[in-house]
Length: 231
Image 1: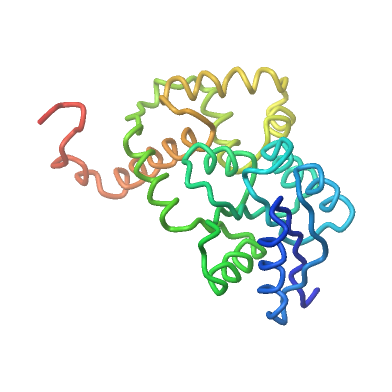
Image 2: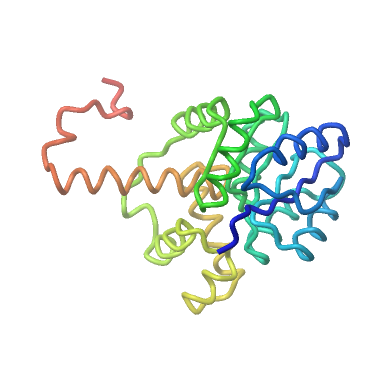
């Protein structure tokens, strides 16, 4: 087992890039393998060096989200976004593309190191301010889902997506076309009033959790107020 966590850093601001690299070099278990300045550099570094974690900015030249998807799904390299953007859309798009973490550039050195170590272990790490915004947004758009609202095939698809599989992988597992998977996901997102796969999966997981609680404690939800009733 490699004693080092190998890291690639991609950001179009050289001074910030160097500052991050210098911070990480002070840790014995972290090793910066290469640096880049745009989405294409990120792809190239990931393909050539296969780091354990790729640090990437959201706002830099090139199609960043496509690069994140390629690096995380095709190369199985863990991506941690390091950015100034507090935009919920940027965070959702990055996580949907496969990023395992989202950290703001104002983060302290120790917290950045903690985020890298967490992501390297396969965990998810999101800066608390961003996480709170995402949770608030999900709650505002949360849909109360009845099992009959989704067809059997739609539920199959969203269950597979919730495990982290790509559309292509879901299609292969269910023996259907990738376009059919996309069509089912579009229908699921419309029914759940979700803007993207991340919101759809989050809504379904909460529904499954409520169902599990209901089975274990049949009376658990009887005294709760139904948000649709207006009471």
